[in-house]
Amino acid sequence: MRQALLTTLAVPLALLGTAGPCRAADEPPEIAAPPSHRFAVTPSWTHAFVPRSVSADAIGLTVQATFDARGRFGLGLTGALYSPFPLARAAVPASSPASETLGSLIPEFTYTPLRGPRAELTVLAGVGVLASRPVSLVDPGHRTFSYDTNLAMSYGAALRVYLTRQMAVSLEGRNVVYVQAQESAQVDQRAPGDPSTWYGDRRLVPAVETRLGLTVFLSAREP
Image 1 (tube, one colour):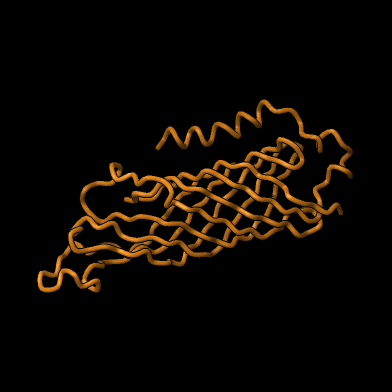
Image 2 (cartoon, one colour):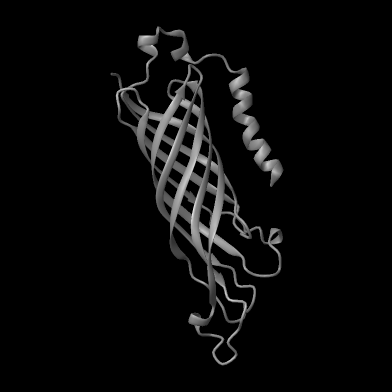
């Protein structure tokens, strides 16, 4: 897990240190200014650090539009789908509770406080939904949990290193916080198949997501 995080951080930093200025850096400031409207799509590989979870890797996708004259304020929609990847059961202790994540979808507000000729830094925050479920460890013979949709709050930052004016490498980090229902440690011997007896306490779960992706600017209108 630590090696995956270090690799995720190293790729954009290496590009930032070795790549030459993008096309915009060679133009006069009045021409190099960002367009007033930009639409960007960022597919990404996502790795999440979630306490006692069997879900770690996901496919991520972020769609973002900036709308002010300086290109600093914007709206985004970010999602992650964990189900295509195998579960990391070996990383979870045999004792309960444990959880599994299906995916998330979160609308976000974005603000870009720093922008240079080769990179930009954007902060983001939003509220959306995340689907998860407990992993049955106490009584797997009777308990089969379904996914529940939970309210999720997200905040983080994204660093983009320009390759061209229309493309950039993106490194995102965000903390997605939600409330997860846990599996009950007790088994009702009179009705072990009754789903109302399967759940225990609910706890606040922080899911730290790191994303490495490629941002493509689909269209722009110059100011």
